[in-house]
Image 1: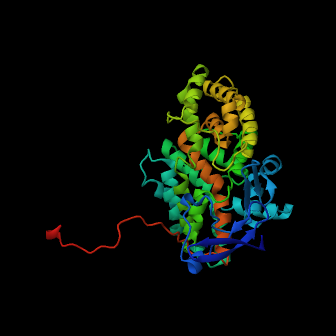
Image 2: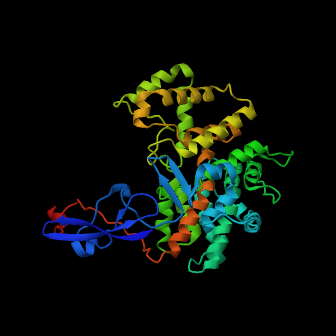
Image 3: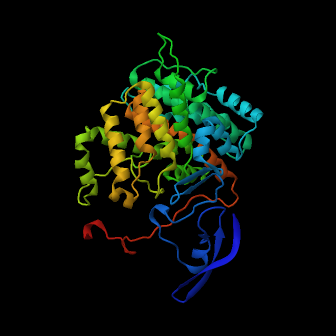
Length: 431
């Protein structure tokens, strides 16, 4: 990013201010308003911060109009096709693609940290058997600072690095343990001879009584899901992690805060909502009814898995996810599944319908990922935990960048107060 010589002139009342304009590598210019309150006595009003850049970042870039997603400058389509999740993790964490030696070392470090502290097994017993896996993950990840106190000093680069490796390595194990706990099945320990995605699938679906072989097509699809969800710029959960980290909170607490935010149905629960919508529709012959409802402004029904707050074009991740969906469903021989039939017909109608084209309501990544995960055997309650596993590296990369940013301050948004004016206290007998 370069600071240009351009300024934006702002005039109000009897005040005139020249606000610097900052030019990024990609994307629109940004008006620097850091001195607005100090020099002008006013501040901006921006609910949801949708027009406000809260930080400078070199990690992820999104162009919603073009339908473009870049990790450190690399298009997501190329990474999903040619790379794999742990290589993408290295890229997000360190800024460049690794050499063969660097990748081998990084994968070895991740593999050696996949097991969790044995006492954490007992920690799970404090949850009800029917507890949502996300509730368990919020609690367990937040408690990691009690089990790994040697990597909580955010001022120590070495401890930050250790904490980063530990969380990327252990998050699949914790998610799988949460799943097994909900089923009443024994925990399955990770294996060092398996890749990241295969290890996760084995920990979720194997049992001690029999052998379990991970199908490479399913592992590849799982790896793509991890890759496509690894980071997505300054979304709600990432902003939560950064805001938590701005106070100096330990990294485990910051990631637990991100998981809690991700749990919201408007954020991480979108793929679950999309699958539940497909099941609500139930059969192909009911699609016209729901299409009509989606077009009716007075009807609260909305098509889940279509459109995106950022992407005003086709979600670039959706193309890759659709390919994986076709491969997985073909492998499992469930192309005649009624939910899948509804999904394919709904997709066809939406892509051809002028209304959806005009509104740019294209299928997004959540539309396909839920179908894949259900086909693999995951219940909808595990969709968001899998999202959390994927996004952990993005949260950590953003957190590390925030910690090392000399311009970063503790988060302190302003407010537009519309409550009662100043007034005097009235004794209770006079009220």
